[in-house]
Length: 398
Image 1 (cartoon, rainbow, N blue to C red):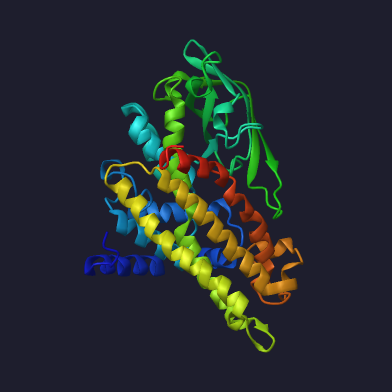
Image 2 (cartoon, helix red, strand yellow):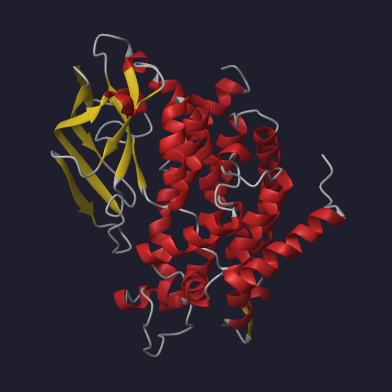
């Protein structure tokens, strides 16, 4: 693979940069760069801007609304968006459910659901994890029993990110209790407004409430909301997870975070010199930059595999592991760089409009909250330990 960008690709980069300069709202970019929390309205606004340009579902086929980009264009776009302060696209509809529907959904489902994902009419969340069934998704206990033209769903999902905003949830449900674990699971689309659906927020370490528990009590779901075949949901779930894990790696966001770390380390002083001249701190920064450069190459290989009609395999697990470790290390170095000024937790500083005098460097206001929040990266989407098992099976045959 030639890792040098062609003149055409550099021209595309300039086009993306011009688009971001013109269309990315400065208010939203400033919040992203400051590590502040985004509202649903912020995310909806950016979603609509990208959709209007035709760049929202940038890995979908053109016939379903994708831009027809190759691997390199997608890499350039994701990187430039992150560097400019573009928010992460809410992944559940566009990046997770969309590819599953395109590959396994029937024509009626594609015709109905895909345009609603693009328009933002439906906000999706993910119903995978349960108490006792996180990385081991084959242990899901939420049931769906067929009764005429409906399934009756009972059970509980947890760690449902942004479920408070969602009107739809895609769920793994058990439709055959007698079959072995992976064989009795189906993939179901559930309306969050249905009678019997209850959502309870979970307060996280950083003080936010972006994850939730979802309870289902005799929830009626139309049979036409079954994706693919009954009891074949495990196949669809694995396909979806390869896309989720690649997205969790967040290569572009790692690049942007490293740039921010360098700015902090250049202005924070230690023993009369900038922190980036401290040998130990500089060595850790250099190591994380080396790891990030290696991950960029792997990311391009994964995107190229998808663009060629393949499915991300063990490489997506590799990306998930290294990407989350790198991002956590960068956030840890940011927290270390601001030192004791990261200690005070000022909840108001996590939101737009906070105008009080900062305690220490301005980056300190969100350093600890972001550090604690993103400890979850190595757990969700399948813990990094589970990813190592996947790699050992797929590559080494163990």
